[in-house]
Amino acid sequence: MNAAEQASLITQILSLGAAHAAVIPVSSITFHPEFRMMCESNACGMFGKSWMCPPHVGGAQALIQEAQAYRTAVVYQTIHPLEDSFDIEGMLEAGKQQNLLARAIQRQMRAVFDKQFLHLGAGGCRLCQTCALASRQPCRFPDEALSSLEAYCIDVSQLAQSAGMNYLNGANTVTYFGLLLLEKL
Image 1 (cartoon, rainbow, N blue to C red):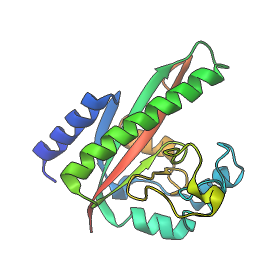
Image 2: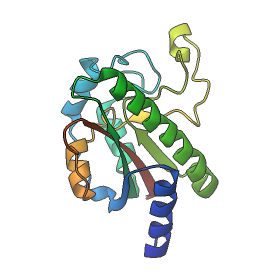
Image 3: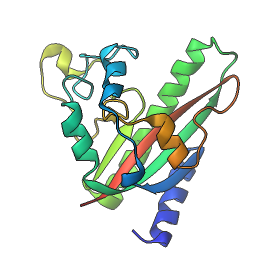
């Protein structure tokens, strides 16, 4: 991917509503299998409830290898204001907005890259109100489903640093990240 293509991609993502976007090499992404422990602790409430979350999405090493099979990464972030640091409703609404942005980016990237990309979001898939896993059915939308950065063992704090972004963006804000992996090796 040349510089003009990278600039165009960043412009597209920013126009869809991301606060920042940057292109970095996948080789600069830090993976730690222990980040899966966040998933296993069920911090987001999705462990075992979605095809795109652990343990159903796959083993840590397999997912790391899948991600490392790409050359280029596009990191994007959203920054949302909160009433205060205890504004759980605001955080949940910001998460919904992040997921809507991720869906819009996914639609646009599918038109450009077909299926030759991997898209990871914040906090699991959440495309369906109730995942098909609950009724032991296969995923209803496998081409649209998103897994999380944490499920793929990505150190999001380090990812932000590699992309030249702030992981924290001040008091009374919440920041979410997404990642596109492009150019399969």
